[in-house]
Image (cartoon, rainbow, N blue to C red):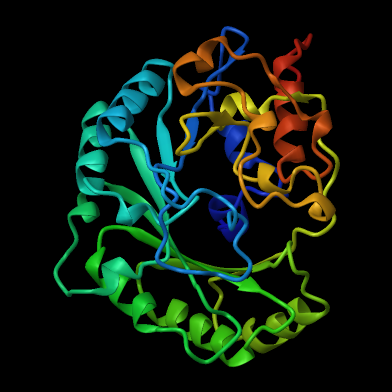
Amino acid sequence: MSFSLESNFTTATIFPWKLVKCKEAIVDGKIVPYHLFFCPTNRCNANCRWCGCKNVDRKQELPLEECFRIFSYFRSLGTKAVTITGGGEPTLMKGFDSLLSFGHDLGLKFGLVTNGILWNKGNDILEANKYLTWSRISVTDTESENYNFSILENVPRRLPGVDIGISFVVTKNVNIESAKKVSEIAEKTKNITHARFVDDYIGGIGDKMKLVIESCEKISNKLIFQERINLEKGEKECFESRLRPFLAPDGLIYPCGCVQIALGLEENFLCFPHQFSMGHWSKFDQAPIFDGSKCSKCFYSNYNKTLKKLMNPMIHEEFI
């Protein structure tokens, strides 16, 4: 039986096979917030040139006690998994391990998007190893030879029970030697499941993705090459906003983690524009389905189309 890296470790722009297989995403005709994307802090210790959140308030952070209430609330609505992401760098949040422990006790499963910088200091097994299902390490410099590759070697070693992914943004000025080094580390490290090379949708990539593929694809079979340039306009009924809402450090719910470019790159906010908010997290169960027709770019059109079909009744269902 073949194993699809892309279907298991990515969601943007691909067909949502996990959604089709999930029996609990829709209950009694209602979409459950099955997977919460959670950004507890905008504080960051990196300055990635391609960052989609450059203009957020870097001082903004949710209090730990409010995070506990958020997890309890969404768990009561049927949430099973939480991806902790940015905004900023989540591991900078005071009490981060307590946050994972609390959610774990509620029965939540966790994924984490991190740059790994803070966790590269030390050699002992991290407390988070007990709570994380997976973590994806974002390479903060893909254009020069100055990136600290020890992060990609040390952090997986400190998280031996966690599936580790690597995210490498391909830019117009991509350093091919760095891309090859990432591929080599992925190949030799047992708990690294994949390395994803993804295009810089803000600054553009020219023909550099082709060069990266030609240079790296033979190094490892753990590589994913994901282009996200030809995106569709959003649909009016954004069912994605109900299934996988995004909670930002301002306490507001957004339909997804890509609304920073929802109006198109020519009107790039690089922050979470309040006009795209679905309201405060505490009233998510009362929020209407987001109107996605205002989005000129949608990363999750396949999710919306699939959810729409799953929501519609069918006859002769046995005849599949």
